[in-house]
Image 1 (cartoon, rainbow, N blue to C red):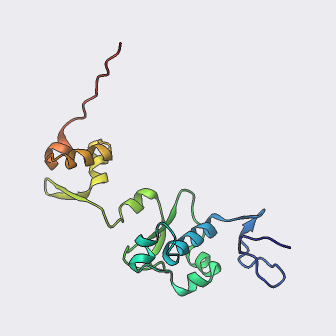
Image 2 (image 1 turned 120 degrees about the horizontal axis):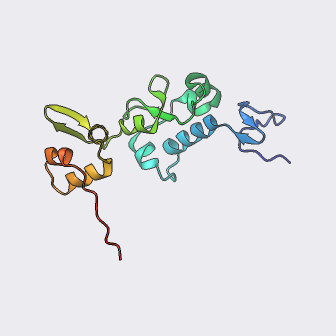
Image 3 (image 1 turned 120 degrees about the vertical axis):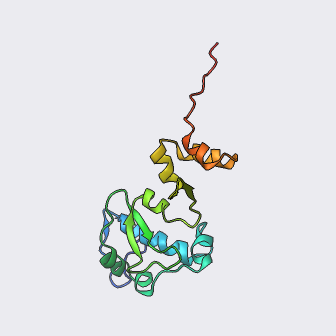
Length: 162
C-alpha cells in the first residue's frame, strides 16, 4: 500500500509532476494547490474572494501542475503568486511572482490619498512620511484631515513609572 499527497500517478506509482523531494512537495506545488483551492473549493475560507466572485484557474493550469510550473517557473524566495489584474483569472500573462508589499498594492480595497496634488496609496504615504501605516489609517478614521494626518509628527508617549 502506498500513501501519497496526490502527486503519485495510478500507473505504477510513478511521480507525475516530478517535484517531490524526500516525501515533501515543492513550494510551487503548494502554491498551485492553494490557488486551485481558493478558486474551486466552496468550503475554502478564501473562496468568497476568489471562486465566489468568479475568479478561476485556466484549464491548462487547473489540470496540470507541469503546465503551471512551465509557465511560471520556480518561485524566487519570499515571493508568492499574484494576479496582475485582480478581476481576471489565474492564467499565463496575468500572473507573476511578487512580494507581499507588491501584492498589497494590487488589492480591491486599496485606498488612494491625495495630498498636495499627488495621489498615492496609503502605505506609500506612510513610508514617505515615516509614519506607521496603522497610525496613518487610524488618524484618517478618526476624522483627521489628510494634511494633518500626514504632516503631524508622531508624539512619543510618556509612560508613568512607579
